[in-house]
Each structure stands twice: as structure tokens, then as C-alpha cells.
Length: 121
Picture 1 (spheres, rainbow, N blue to C red):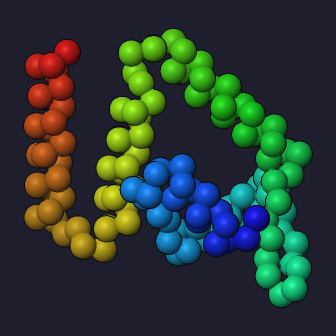
Picture 2 (picture 1 turned 120 degrees about the vertical axis):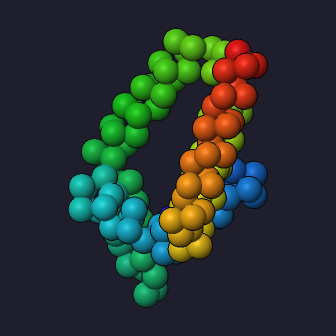
Picture 3 (picture 1 turned 45 degrees about the vertical axis):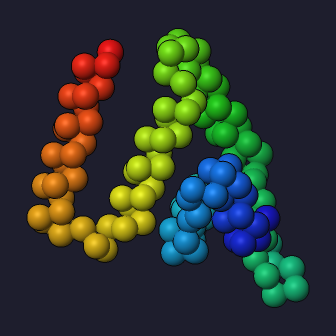
């Protein structure tokens, strides 16, 4: 896949609520290449990233661990996990806007959310 295709694929998985920037994708791809989980081929001047056998094995292990985690706790639904990830991605993508004052507000908001969840559960 080319970088653009990877970004579009991720965006589709998150139903349009998250679209990674090239600035966040390239370091991840670089790390995957360094770990031999992905290889790069150049075709017509464009880089194409291809998962290696080692990468496929690693991905399968991650999938199995994730399924086991979800299977062990069926009440912890995929929707909840997806919402939590969207919050994490939003904060990461907007990290340049976060100063010390905002950090404290965000932490307090997350603590309030946790307390409300305790009331619900």
C-alpha cells in the first residue's frame, strides 16, 4: 500500500472520525520497517509498503491477544474501545494546542468522566 492508501484505510476503519496525518504515519512506518515488520519497494517513484512474514505473524499475535481480551470481558464492547481510541487520537493530533493549563483541565475532565462511569457501573 502507498501512504495515501494506508491513511484512507485507517480513516475508513474509524468511519471518518479519525484521519491520521502523514506526519503521524511516516514515523510509524519507519519503525515498522526498522523492525522488519514491513518492507518498502519503490514503483514508479512511489514507495509501497508491504507487510513481511514477520509482520503477519506479529499482527496475528496482536489480533489473538485483542480477541482474548475482548473475549474475557464481553461487556467491554468494541464501541467503547473505539470511543476511547478516538479521544486518545484527538488529544494526540491536537497536542500542539495543549499547554499546562489545558493539561490540568483535560486531566480533571477525564477524572470527572471516570467518576461518572463509577456511578453508572
